[in-house]
Image 1: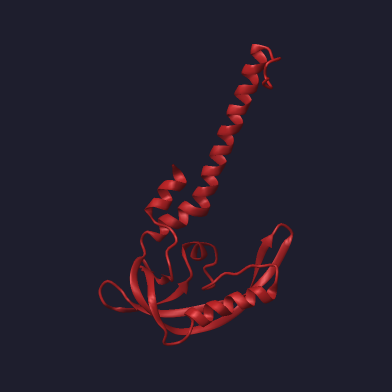
Image 2: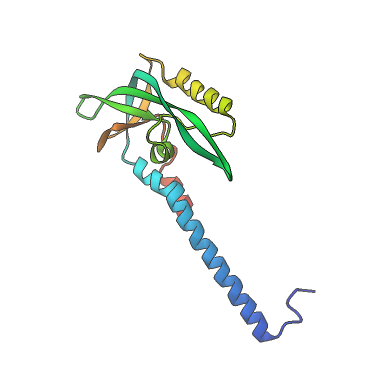
Length: 168
């Protein structure tokens, strides 16, 4: 026995039309949301070129306010890691290191983002990043933006396949 057996044909048609419209609205909302949260930083990250970075400084700026959920606001320490790298013309450039495309897009003032409810967890997480990627003289692979030499990524989370799979 189905749920629609006792409905008139007109009522079935009306229910079907409402379900179809609701599904389409949900699909459009998801495409917009994924476009903003994933596709936008992914497309921006495509311009970044691989290189090798050397840390020249790592300093803490003022703490940054962040939202850790519904009705949850906290702060995180703002670590700024500056690196030098060789660009395509083998010129030395300096830029601010960011963990990935998403953090560059959302938290451009800090190298690493940790927004947990617990201040201690935020401090521990940022300290971990500093210990692993913020030691002066340390060298590792990274990516720079030829159009904006001050933008440097530690890693790229998104590639063309991610963009394709999100949209299709």
